[in-house]
Image (tube, rainbow, N blue to C red):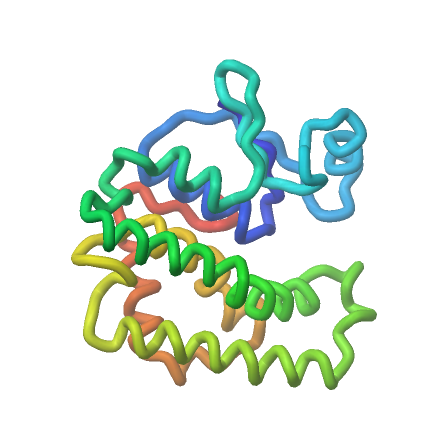
Length: 201
């Protein structure tokens, strides 16, 4: 398999993380933000939706979208709940990550992290994202206050999915993670999973 991956992106990182946790080999092609490699990949149709990640299967089929890739790789593994309701709960958290969490937590981090987006980081926008992000992190804090994992009794794709942008919410996004001790403890548990790799590995 081949993974088109943006090294600094949480969406690409979650796929690389799952591959590492599963011990699966995969060729990785880096297409960083604003790079010639990204533009070349887009020009030759390697990125169906114009962005990474994209997983190219052994038979040549291309699978875009990070959470779709997680489901394809994770089905039948220890990160895929056997109980139908737990599996639906896992998917609910993954949908929430893309629909709510990513559009605030990741966006604020990107405005801080990428020089090309600095002009978009107006004080008003950054303040709004900070308020909304803390509210979203509070949803996770409530969920994790009396449990180790987002779904069931073991790590699932939901944890891998939400870990990607949450673990840099403080360092890149400027969110006050001291307000979320349960989330912080959960981040440590994900980081302790055998095979874990860092985003810059």
